[in-house]
Amino acid sequence: MKLAIVTAFPPSKVTLNEYGYHLVKQFRLNDKVDELILLTDEAVTVDDVNFEEDGCKIVVKNCWKFNSYKNIFSINRAVKETKPDAVLFNLQFLKFGDKKIPAALGLLTPYMCKLKNIPTIVLLHNILEQVDLNSAGFTKNKLLQKAYGLIGTILTKFLLSADLVALTIQKFVNTLKDKYKTDKVVLVPHGTFEMIEEPDYALPSGPKQVMAFGKFGTYKKVEVMIEAVEEVRKNTSEDLEIVVAGTDSPNTPGYIDSMKEKYKNVPGLRFTGYVAEEDVPIIFNESTVVVFPYTSTTGSSGVLHQAGSYGKAVIMPNLGDLTDLIEDEGYRGEYFEADDVGSLAKAIKKVVENDSYRLELAKANYKAAASLPMSEIAEMYLKHFEAIQDKKKK
Image 1 (cartoon, helix red, strand yellow):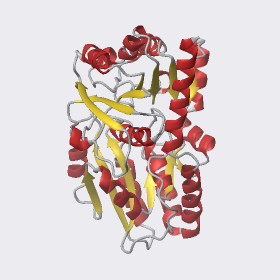
Image 2 (cartoon, one colour):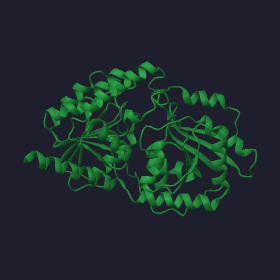
Image 3 (spheres, one colour):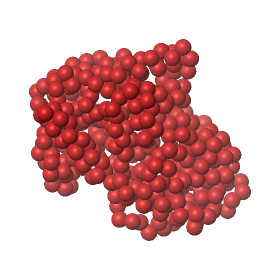
Image 4 (tube, helix red, strand yellow):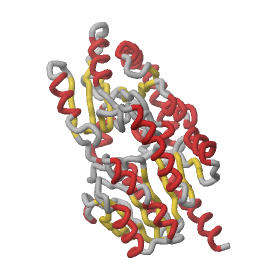
């Protein structure tokens, strides 16, 4: 199969770049794929697509730009030139831009592939029906929220013109099936990026690190974590370090700098900046617990799966999507009430002071992560493509 993937890819900073990296890595190792066409943004070069393992041929085609109005045409042209047997889109609603019109136009590209009769699957990481538009950085205006909801419905219908739309949470599948009366929606779990040998769960010497990982400023805000650790420090003998690993969300440029200034007098607070792929294991292995300082969610959490693969305890807000994911995939965490400093402080204290409890969570999360490696997720997509191709032949 000659498979094309429309995705961001490191060193691009566009959302879902890391997920794209691990999808590509596993597809190229699968015997069913003869050639992989990476339809990506301008930040990626051939030299960036380096893997240690031998695999199929990869062609890099830079065919879109973040916030470009021309993406629908340039991606369509690239598909026409490369002639893939199938196309997979790795998407969320702000994939192609944080400006509303380019973002919306980019989401019409799967429809263009459908018009060419190319087997097409859309992997959709979030759905607007389950997104808090205020917290996620779309808009605070109630009238605009209604307008975006209507636009989201129209765009979802275009996405559903693909042969299949894959979602990573069963709740999302049920929502789209019920609302759009469609049988084109399937569950394909998020999967775990890197499976390492089971760790010994021992902590490195030095302070216990309370770490948050991701792109911050919209629904991921570090204030609550920093202030919660400050509360814990008042009544514990544990030496704690706060680690904020990541960058600004595209919707909130300058957020991390503002946090550095606001909390410049807080001791033991470290901002790592962008974490390169090769440094991700270091960040996770050094942490004691991974905190999810979310005020809402927009879909399945890649950070949760990463934490599991490195055998880490997690502390999570009691929010619908994350709770559903934990229950569906077997992860475990200590919960707190979202955006509540006191509640989070209590959760952090419980984990960092109780090593047996930390180990219990860490081992459960490694077991959950090991049950869904990304290699199996890639195989699921290929089986779906085979079924689509067989159906088209009839």
